[in-house]
Length: 270
Length: 308
View (cartoon, rainbow over the protein chains, first blue to last red):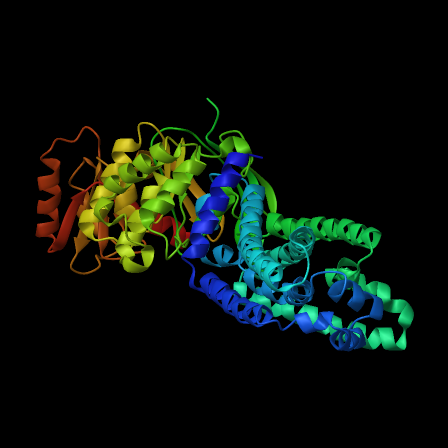
């Protein structure tokens, strides 16, 4: 593999991103969503969760221990950001990472690239382009959330910064398997819109089916681990060993999805 | 010398449709090769297989001694794909610069190379524009320009002049002619006079099968034949009127264009033979609309593809 080719392809993709209406629309929507939420967090929306009444309410939704760990022992604003970000990762990534190879398979633009570089270089270049498209805004939003937390949470800066590093790393790590997940549909459907539709359908139908299955057959919970959102509980838990285990599993998801996507891209006619 | 392309028993099917069927051919470096055949003959499929855009159903392809997609081929072959689009919103010169960088140029040299190829296709003044602001002909020229980046050994051009005005088409033909010394071209076109003009040999595909691969001079008589387009189809026994001309060796009525009459004559015939042939036609009351020396490739290809 020629890394110089990959570097050129990533730069090419980034240039493409800033000139693509659909991808800019994603960034605008992403920006507006977080602008509104961070504004609310900045007004202290989450600080009341650190108070006894608020924490009691939080423990109705989350487990009592988890609510306590997130909002009493750690910066509440950053924890609120963490929970919302983790909940939104699948939706944003499915949208933002849908066009990796799809648009160019459809337009046959890849035919200009193939005589000049390898299929794997193209696939990897587009994957890395999608990783940058998703993670750079996450870093920006995560940094703003951290600054807000430093301002309004009643914690020392070092604690907030260490926790911010933890939160942002997990949000980014959780996004990566979904980007690889979208690489599959992007290569398969050859249409960014269709890739979103198929991935969303699979994600939501799977979630609904799992909901019904686990009620009737509790032993079927393992099926839920076909998608990385089954790991969300472990990733937000305060238990370090559980987090490490979940991160290791995320790496597995990443490799498996990436490989399946690559297999489809390698064998398909372009 | 190693063939530039070696194809063995190559087949490609799309579901039940057979695009190419058991093609075996070996193409040598040198003069441009024309790839011709009616619509659906498999020309674009063959180009796509050579470049690795699509995978064969069976058979093997070797380009410059390597299978398609082999890293040793990167930057050594170029193609003008028939239906590929440049990115609509990125300026042409930027896209060509990136493509040149993929061929190993540094960023600065790549930009110079992009400008050079844009000048070759007379598009340098519009290079800063994005494709959504260019006309169809300009887009075609931009796509042609990318096929001329760097020093590739093999260039595949799928319908290079389709949709271009006659002046620009002439420029592109001239560009092919002048650069053909350093690289081998394979040009697919429905414009057979263009193929005749720029190519030394021709590969004829018909319904997914290889029908002929010959030099054009072997395929069509260029010097010892006169082709007439008549006002009306001649009588079947038209050859009788030429019996008094011993230099006439063969008289053919066009198998596809029935108003066409091909008169072959002996190599040793003098230049006045043309006059005598026209006199015989005049005496027989056969009038023509057009006369040309030699046999046209177009008629020959039509004859081959429609008779098989």
